[in-house]
Length: 315
Length: 285
Image (cartoon, rainbow over all chains, first blue to last red; front, side):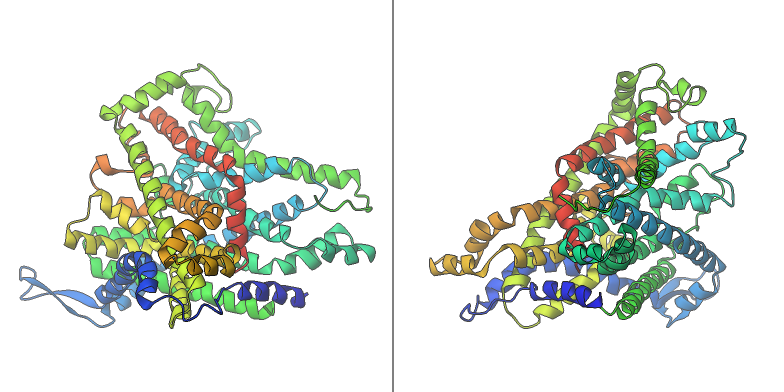
């Protein structure tokens, strides 16, 4: 099994593309002319802001002579980071988003995987319809999706609440305990189909002959799915997990919309909302430190996850 | 297309699978169906009638209200979204294609290093860039202009990654060699030979970037104060926060939300195959 998987990755590695026999190749100036239209904005709008944020995060604003003195900015070492880690709001937001991610990401990816596997079996009819239905939410901007769902959560407007009440339930989607999961549902709704299609495309790329032998041995569809298909598409599952981790740590728009209708979402509900709230209070250095911490956590988690799983899967 | 197996699946499992998929399809389509129904109702019926059943058909009146509200600001937002997304994705696709092509076809020192920097860029949370960008842009006076949203939007490391693997797969070395032997320069070769072979891939890259910009919310929120520069997402977000104070605004938020997703859904369904190539190549990494 690992053999097949490694072969899959090796094929891609060789398509990485290198030109042999092109007699010296184009001049350096030409190569630069091809690269510069992307790299100039990439440096200006990606790398410079990263460097700037890191630089800012090591500055502090101090005042001379008490509260009415003039303020000046100076090097503060890790002061801003110490403040971040001493901030209970920061840990609360991390805790919320951690809980959110630990539950929402596996649930979403599990549903996506089941759908992809079912779309890949002969058991199912109307495949095109199911595929489009699942992928459609990807066309909806996150903020708009949150607005749509907030109508479905609203006690006044929601047909879902009406139905649940009719069967004797008292749902409160915006209550203090539930609102985190209502936000998680918006993310699940938005991204399940996208992740499903990534996995489904990987399944479609598996040559059918691989299953023939297993079938001759009398393996059930179930066994083929879990013992052959899932291990082969492991790289896609890892990729979708990494994208989901990155997305979760960046959450802003969806909870911000729910905040408009629920008092149970604070202005510092997610780390990103906290960074924005701090920046709005003109404490840019502190906001920069929070942004850097979020980015570092994202990197560590996504790289860590890739290392861990690729070793385990022997990729 | 798939396996005609001799293994007979029981009718029960077939039915169970279909039922499960139908439930999931309902879950995915329900909010969109609700939005369509709600957009046809007068504001008064939103709370007083069942959300999934049509009542008065007031869609055209609602559209009229939507587009005339605050001197037609919604039309402006829609136009802004189109400008940011279409122009941004077009420029972004071109520069990604140039860069990905060069990374795939030219040999030079530091190539793999540049490519890993770009791959690292794929993992950078873009919201973490928005605040420092705001500070840099306010220092240069770009803040609160079209450029403040447009310029960062053209950069798509994922687009370069796609362009590189698509070029490696779709542009054979021999064709480039013969163009060069005919005396074509590298740019001529790229624009007259490679671009044609790459067209389907470029559509894929364009679509991903288009949706990314169309859906973007955090960057415009940080950069823009002037309402006339807002994209739809930011405009509707602002309106949604005022529904309690402004009468009939809720109905406009609903109708506006519907208007903002319909064009993209249509483009999606028409261009399905491009999505699948993109997602497939994303998954082989």
